[in-house]
Amino acid sequence: MKTIKKILIMGAAGRDFHNFNVAYKQREDIKVVGFTATQIPDIEGRLYPPELAGQLYPQGIMIHPEEHLRQLIRELDVDTCVFSYSDISHADVMHKASQVLALGASFMLLGPKETMITSEKPVIAVCAVRTGVGKSAATRRVVAALKNMGLKPAVIRHPMPYGDLAIQACQRFATYEDLDIHKTTIEEREEYEPHIDNGTLVFAGVDYEAILRAAEQEADVILWDGGNNDFSFIKPDIQIVLVDPHRPGHEVNYHPGEANLRMADIVLVNKVDTAEPAGIEQVMASIERLNPGAIVVKSEMPVSVEQPEQIQGKRVLVVEDGPTLTHGEMAYGAGVIAARQFGAEELVDPRPYSVGSIRQAYAKYSHLESVLPALGYSPKQLEELEKTINQVDCDLVLAATPIDLTRLINVTRPIARVRYEIAELGMDLEEAMRKVDKSKKLF
Image: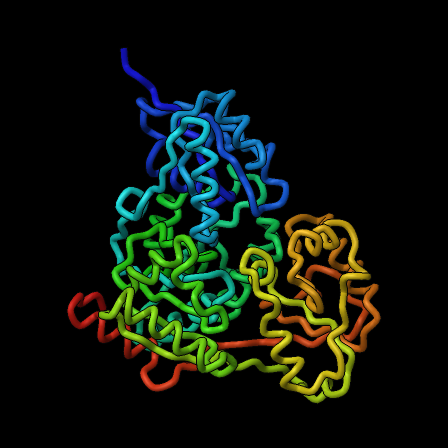
C-alpha cells in the first residue's frame, strides 16, 4: 500500500502557493494538509480554492494562522513542514525549525531547481538581500535600459494575492483602470503604478506558469520584479541583487537574501549617497567573501520633491512605504531623508493619532516612531489610514509611498510626494548586463 506523506506549507500568501503549484499539486504520494500564514493581515482562515488546488484537492486547502503551528502538526499528523516565505533572519528560521522538529516532524526548504519555471524568453531577475533596498527603482532602471536596447520588456511581479485567489490567478496590468478592476491594495499599487506610468506591462497573481506564458506572448524579455528578499520564481539568465549599506550585515543574516547574494551575476550596492562609509565597506567585504565573481555596481538613490521649498521650516508627517518599515525593519525611508534634506522643522509623531489596525501596527513594530507606514490591505484599513493622517497635527504630509495616495483616500492636509530613482556611479546597469550577456548571448 502506497504511503502518503502529509505536508504543511508555512507561508505568507505568495511563495507558499507557488511552491504548492510547482512541487506538490500533481503529486499523488503527497497530501498538503494545509497552509499556515503570517505577515499578511486577514489571510488566515481563508481557503486556497479548489479551482487552483486542482483535482486532488476538490475541497481546496485551508489557510491557518502560523500561531497554531504546533497544534496543527499534532492534529493533522504532519510529516514535514515546508518553509515558504521570505525576509526572515537565519536565527528565526531555525527557531521555527526547532519548534517543528521538537514535535517529531521534518523541516524543509525547497530550492530554485524545484521551484523555478523556465521561460522561452530571456529572463532578468531583480532580487535583494532585504525588503526596502530599492528593488522597484532598480527594476524601473533595468526596464529603461532594455527599452534603450530596442527590446520590449514585461514585468512579472512577485505575488501579493490579498483578494479572491481564484480571480487573481493570472493578472495583467496596463492601465489605472486595471488596478481598480482587480481591487488592488496600496502595497500592490506601489509596485504596479510606476510601471504603468512608464508604459510597461505588469503581470502578477497566483499561477505563475500561466502568468509567465501570458507575459511571453507580449514581450521580448521577461523581467522578474522580486518581493521582499525572495529568489525568483522564473529561472533567470541574468540575476541582479541589491544590497543595502544602511543595514550592513543583513546581507549574510537573512533568508533567502544570502542565497540571492551568492547567486547574483550583478550586485547593486544602493543608497551609497546616504549610507555611512563603514556600512559600504562592510557590504563590499561581504560581496567579496560570498560572491567574488559578481560584477559590482554602486548607485545613489536621490530623492526629489516637486516644490521642495514647501518643506522648509514645516512640521511634517512622513508617510513611508509600508513593507520597508514593517518586515523590512527600517526605522525610516525616503520620506525622512527628504524631510531632513529640504529643511523640515519637525517630524511629527503620528502614534498618538493612530487608530485601529494602524495603532496595532505600532504595537507590533515598536522600532517605528516619527513615521507612518502606508498600510492599506483592506477598505477598512484604508479608512483607518485616512483617519490617522487627517488627525495628525502637522503643516504638511510628506508621502514617500510610490503611489498617489489621494487616488485612494481623502487627505485633508496639504500633501507633497517624494520620488526616488536609481542613479549609478561609474558602470551602469546596462553596461553590467551587456558584460554578462557577452557569454550568454541573450539579446
